[in-house]
Amino acid sequence: MIVKEIHKESGTEIGIVCKKRLYHCKSKYQKIEVFSSKYFGNILRLDNCFMMTEKNSDQYHHNCLNIIKKNRYQNILIIGGGDFGIAKLVTENINFSSLNIVEIDENVMTVCRKYFPLNFKINQKLSKRINIIIDDGFDWLNNYKKNKFDLVILDCTDPDTQANSLYSKAFYKLVAENMKKNALFIQQSGSPLLSDKSLILYMIANLRKTGFMNIQTKCFPMPIYPLGTWSFTYCKKA
Image 1: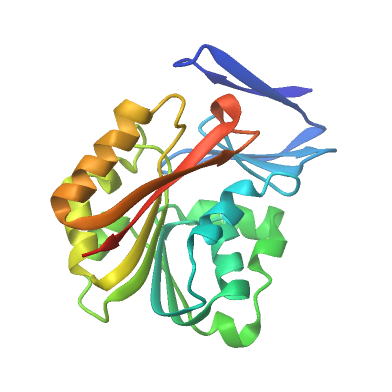
Image 2: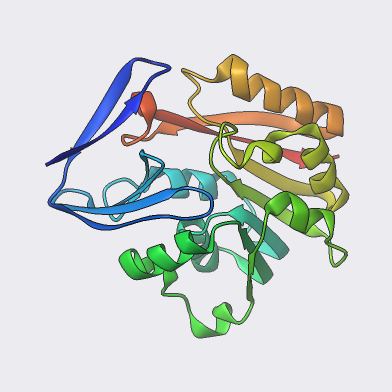
């Protein structure tokens, strides 16, 4: 069977030949599905959109890590990222004291732990430094009163989902208040071919108003996402 993602904005669709659907449920926040395929291995789909594959499509996670130039951080925050793709690479490439992962949908983490187990195979000593929090990222950070972060990664869905508040000026203000000086902030910023004006320029304007500096956008190929190109926008706290 061919499983498709139809993208109305661009009038395009992408299809992946799959063997069968391994899992499906409707969580409080979204529809979660896992399919098996010969080429990509297991495939995660949320609300009919392809999110992650088991193999041959790891550009998203690796391009996020390539933005990070230092190999030592004290306190790291990932909001979203329940699939543990970025978290796994962080543990393999960065020396850290504390890694906090705030995921709103516990079902995503449970499903990915079962169907994408390699992402969760982390050195036991490093696992003790990871704090998993099931909560809304905005609400959690609004109540956070502990050590400030020197690296923050927003691995969230697009703003037309439950992640809408994570692209707001109010949220960026919260992020800035909880970051050290010169700390690095990274956020997925959608397709540069489709969302340059509607999302990327909007993000940049809000980040600039909040006092972030050296704002840049990195584009990279992503074959399972709309039009095959995606981006991260990143900057530093002034």
